[in-house]
Image 1 (tube, one colour):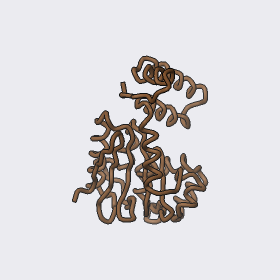
Image 2 (cartoon, one colour):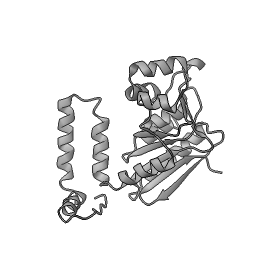
Image 3 (spheres, one colour):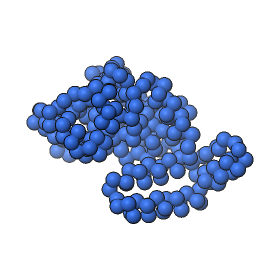
Image 4 (tube, one colour):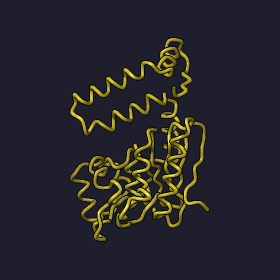
Length: 240
């Protein structure tokens, strides 16, 4: 059985980690990166869901390889220009949490658990764990989890902003359907501008937002959106 599968449903691609016992070892990371590349090149895919199986999203702790090849799973999904969401149903630990943090949004079931235990094993998260966790939950909460290896449940994850919602598979499917209905280029630009918000001054961020808005004016999707609004119909975006 492959360690990673890709299922397409309309404009939504679901990348599922199927390895047992859900460990993100080098082979799985390589297969995951290949799956990400395949959906990146597919113009029909507008939203990507990342999921696990059998009560495990993903987990595992490894020292950083001397050469980052294959790259971390988080690094692979973070570069994708399409909106991404992690669907967490069960354990989301260590490298699994780093992968989830690299997605744009995270939804979880009530039984999900989260933690980063690298420090307790004499290591440091190397696939974005320190940086993305601090950006998601703040420096204090990040250090609280990182320095102790504490494992928290879904309710606490929601409280500190680690996940955006708690629900079931339909919760994620509904969000993905709504996101996929948007104009693909506008979605990519929105993701770019929002990702830069924490790294730019307000003036720089506003300038980037304005520049991207100008670029959108020449797209066919922009014209389609305006026409659909004027004629009171659903738009048919094509990503051009």
